[in-house]
Image (cartoon, rainbow, N blue to C red):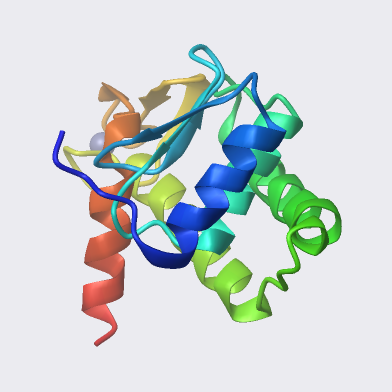
Length: 159
Ligand SMILES: [Zn+2]
Ligand SMILES: [Zn+2]
C-alpha cells in the first residue's frame, strides 16, 4: 500500500517501535489498534497525538468487542492514559481540543451507526455489532470500517 508516514509522526514511530517491540506499527489507509493482530495501523494523516492514543489502546489491551457505552469509555480511558503516561514520556503535550474533537467525532460515529437505515430512528444495540429498530423492527449490522470516512465527512461538514 502506498502510504508513507511523514514528518514528526514518522520519527515518533521509530522510537515507539524500539520501545514497544511486541507491537507492530504498520502504514495503512485507516488509523486503529487491532488487538487480534497486536498491530497499530496508521494512515498518512495520522498525527503524533492520535498515534499515542492508539498506543494507549494497545498498552491497556483494549479489544473491540463491547457495547457502544463500553467503547466510548475505552476511548476516554485511552486519551487519559495517552495524556498522563505516554505523552510526557516522549516530551509531548496533547492539546485538549484534539481530545474533544476526537471524542466528538467518535460519538457521531457511534450515533450514525445506531441509526436505522430504513427509517432513521435510533436503534437499540442487541449485541456488539447488531442493532434493532424499535419503530420498524428492522435489524442491521454495524460496519466498523466506515469510521475514517465518517470522521472526514464530519470535518468537511463544519467548514
Ligand atoms: Zn480510540
Ligand atoms: Zn426503522
